Every structure is written in structure tokens, then in C-alpha cells.
Image (cartoon, rainbow, N blue to C red; front, side, top):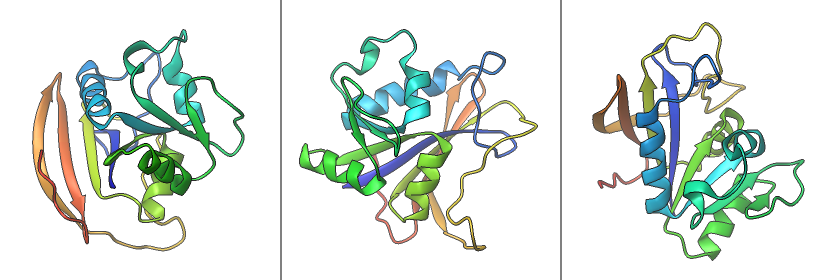
Amino acid sequence: MKTILWATLTANGNYAQSGPENPPKKEALDDFFTRAKTAGNFIVGRRTFEGMRGNGGPGPFADIDIVVVSSSAGDIPGVQVVRTPEEALDYLKGKGHQTALISGGADIHNSFLGQGLVDELIFNVAPVLEGRGLNLLIDKENYRYKHVQLLDCTPLGGGVVQLRYVLENSSPVHN
């Protein structure tokens, strides 16, 4: 199964934190919706999922398998809740998915990256500088490097630039 980590970063490299003063860019959200529909799924952490849920209802994700990775969440109607990244991937494989879209937040991204479970990275660089922020990490303990190969660089509009990379030891797959 191909795993794609999808994230929005600030222009100064932080993991973008959305909020009332800095809402997500429409162009990046539109890209996410398109990729989630294509994959037929996405994996997300509990806090990010709760933020996405808004007023409830399925919205644009009615026909998409949503997997929430959480060590503390109980059942959440309409989604599969698992405890680990491996369980999330196993669940999606069992449903016949060929691609898993890992969509957020920082803890989930870092968990998948740290365990070597990511094949491709999609970074949407938003035109904003952030004074404080979270980082995407492949290793919290050591200074480790993981080389990537640029597959594509695409302006999405609204000042958002999308960078698509394949991680070393993965096979580049072009859309």
C-alpha cells in the first residue's frame, strides 16, 4: 500500500497551525478534498478530526473511509478508531485500499514518519510566517536524515505552492 503524508507548512517551515486568525487556505483544502476522494480514505488524529468535524454531518467525506488514530478516543460514529499507525494501515488494506492518505495533525505525521511508514510527502507551503509552530520530525532523539526526491512543484493559487516528494527507498509514482 502506498502511503502519502499530506501537510500544510508555513513559508518559514513550521507545521501550519490553523485558527481564526490563520484559517486554512482554500486552495490547499480543495487539493485535500480531491486527494481524499481519489484515495477513498484519510487517516487523522483525534484532535484534528474534532476540528474538521465542525457542525457534524458527513459533509464532503460521506463516501470516504476515515480512520482516527487515538490512544484515548472511544467509538466515534461514522469513523474507524485505531490506536496505532500500523492498525490504521491494516484496516485500510483490509478494506481494499491501494493508497492511504495521512492528513494530520503533527503527532500523527511524526508517528508515521518516525516509523518509516511514509512513501510520499505532499507539502503545501502557505504564504504566511509563523512565530511559533510545530515541526515535522523523523526522529525526536537523534539527528537523522532521510533524503527525498522532488517529484513535482505546483502552484495551487492564492500564494500556495505544493511540493511533492518521494522518500528514499520508495518508488516514485507519478499521477
